[in-house]
Image 1: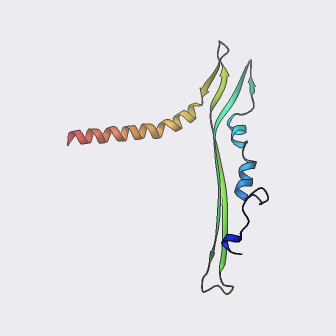
Image 2: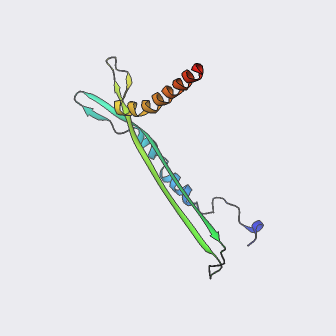
Image 3: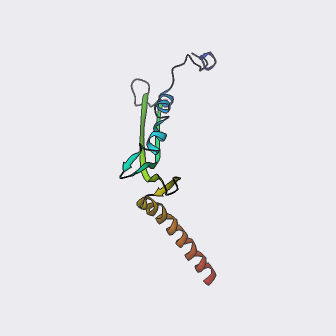
Length: 130
């Protein structure tokens, strides 16, 4: 089949694996970013998290002279994800929703920022001294 005689992709074409995965995980981020409300004493809180995930795949054909069948087809794929709890949504005394950060997540985010800031300040000081 030549390049010009391929059928145009459309509703009749079977969706690729990437499209199928994207459809299945479409609501995954929202469902995991905001958890189910949890009752703690007389207060109800909603857990909040940062959700990241990704998938990839690929394939190719190698026309090596060593292959007796005329070439080798190679394919592969993978995926992964991470969920980091960043805090909770709760009501304050006025009944308004407020975000209460997770101290561990705040520290995990601040360490690289403070390191970069300190490194930048030390370079500026070193430049002015020389």
